[in-house]
Length: 277
Length: 333
Image 1 (cartoon, rainbow over the protein chains, first blue to last red):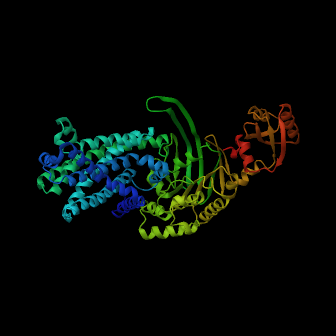
Image 2 (cartoon, rainbow over the protein chains, first blue to last red; image 1 turned 60 degrees about the horizontal axis):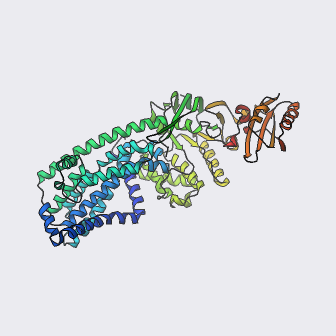
């Protein structure tokens, strides 16, 4: 890419294509936007069924959060966003192979790895749209709205927390494409990410070993940081630490994903597997 | 380098294993290319003529940098396909499928715009180019319909339009008319001739002898991973002009018959196409020389206890060149 205009055109191409396709399956978009409410409602219902009227005060005492609905909806947005991102990135080779578009990207003057990462960026942006809609609904119902600064911070944290998962998706893609079990492998990865990120509960309730593992997931920092932003209970130093941790992890995830993908790509070009599906 | 494309001793072997992750099945080795060499001159339409499995698509994929050769070298527009792959990609447009290669939930125009942006075309140039290509390929009226509503012929034309987006000097078309209705196939052939007038170099693969004869300045006959002959269609046909061709329809055919026919004095090539495997009905094409050969051919068939359903004398065609050179029939696939 010779100048800045060329990568901008490529990002424009990928993002506008992905957005158009996503908005043409509008029902799916509505379903995805409603999932955080469904899980949030379930969590609150289970809590109420177990602890009775004191459930909410117990929740506040254990988490320091006075707004359980916002807490669970934010967790739900991150969970569904991370699931879609891992699944889309892991499945991108096979999906595009089945459409016959995979090889065509190799004929364009771009790094294919960057092209797939731009696809993951599109998924992150769609998650932002969902977060904006869902959080606005919760806040508006409770009589307040997001300020532009809060939204910008939340958007940055969401993208920083989710985008590194593309690296994880690329690892799954590279390892599983030959065996055509991409979605099963992606679902296993998603289960662990969902369980260990503290989307619906504070990680402090888990044993030390689980908290140790969670340190290596960018989504666990994103979940914590987003809640802190919306509850107003975060110092700029804490936020800065979380952003640095996410950035470092993001870099590491993407480096590992890149290594696995390039190895697969080289083998696929030798074996004639770029177009096999 | 004066030639647009040069392939020298290209070889490719595919090794596959049947079975899953835990139980790896039998190893299968397929020698797709066994030292393929040819040159394509600038501005010419060059055809790779051969049946399925002959190595046509493998050749195109190596030349378009999608596949690494095991041995040999190739240059496209003067650039080496392995060492200077990005330079090669800038110079080529590739149409690999007739009915795939698109996002079904996008319109034809949106699909082309997506790929135009990936080729770094600015918005104005991209839109003008897409408009021109829709007109060239007779797709203007359907430009804004979703690709999921397109017919196979429309998708094939859209594939060619996509390959032409960045106006490359060299075009690779892999079986551009396969599965198309006669009208769409005619339009695709007209477009190929139009592009030739524009000065583009075109390498197309086909197993349709009529197409090769009509479109190609020169044709390479490829069979089982080897180029068996190269020449203009008339040069190739002149090789069988003195020969005679007979097509015999037989009942009770088995594979041994072709071998026995090949041994008859004066027989140059034999190829069979099984029409009805259950009943054993097959059409056997025999290219031969000399007046006495036909008597020996028919005597052999009658002695084999076969029922001869019909015997037709035919004018030699490009397919007969293929039969003579390879002992295969193009339409077998």
